[in-house]
Length: 67
Image (cartoon, rainbow, N blue to C red; front, top):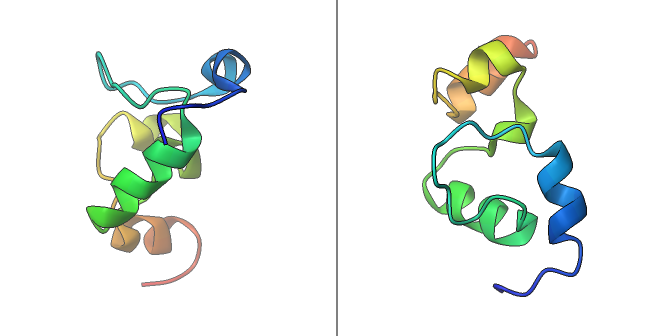
């Protein structure tokens, strides 16, 4: 999955603030990783929430009308 033809374009819009993230710009790997951790990637959250690194499903639901 390390091959991503759109990596440069993805990097320009990636909101991830995690320093040295090896998946930055490789959306398929990012999504796979975060789902395996029972969370969502940075692009699913507004910047002020993304910076807290709480990317849980619970936090997503709180933001968008769930729990």
